[in-house]
Length: 308
Ligand code: PPE
Image (cartoon, rainbow, N blue to C red; front, side, top):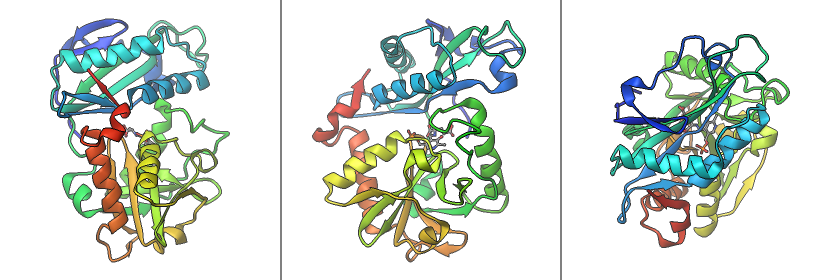
């Protein structure tokens, strides 16, 4: 999806002009993928633009860096404030996508990351529906990927590691080339893990089920956790259970969740319709509550929002 340039990008404590926010071609992360990032969204609310679950995203960024043994040269509070600054100075009143990146900079080459300088950048720009407005409305066609998700002892799946996304890109491109919208990935044990940049839920007998992130080798999604809370509040049961591809084929409903993608119904998996192929009632209920919550339209979810 194309980027719409904004005015400033925060780099290591300074707001730099968009066009000047560059790095050297020998930047370590460019060669070895050792870096961590976040994807955050801010939404227009009746009381001004608000970042959704900012604290949790910043915490996950620090967790990713801890796993990678990268010492972030800023505190979580500093990056919390910096993120708000980026949204504010770019006057993104209608909401935006925010991309913090912690990367190993210029100065060292070789596999050892420990001597490398650690840099931080935070950019923000307006970004529409990641899987398209049609997908949000009508559902997306999914394909189980021939690529497995990382084995936990090959890549730490709780870390949003830059290089880890090679695996996601292989699966995404494979699915697109085959005419599908998005891929579902199995773990090395053939259980359902997650999508290339989203978690997933199925609905069976009125109950929501999602693969347990840690056992499934999936990222612990912040949207996933928001949906668990919303579903409980709407009176639905939610459980984390291992599932296999049959469970997807036979689900009454299914949908995926992610910051970029938001909440998107799944209309088919490997050409088997999910239910009758149209978004189901429980999917629609949690989806519409999510969209209201992020836009500050439901007071009980106010503490998820940080006004800039
Ligand atoms: N799994 C993966 C692999 C993943 O990348 C994401 C977020 C999720 C699950 C959902 O996590 P959460 O956003 O906390 O609900 N993917 C980010 C990057 C997408 C991209 O294309 O880049 C995102 O949604 O911002």
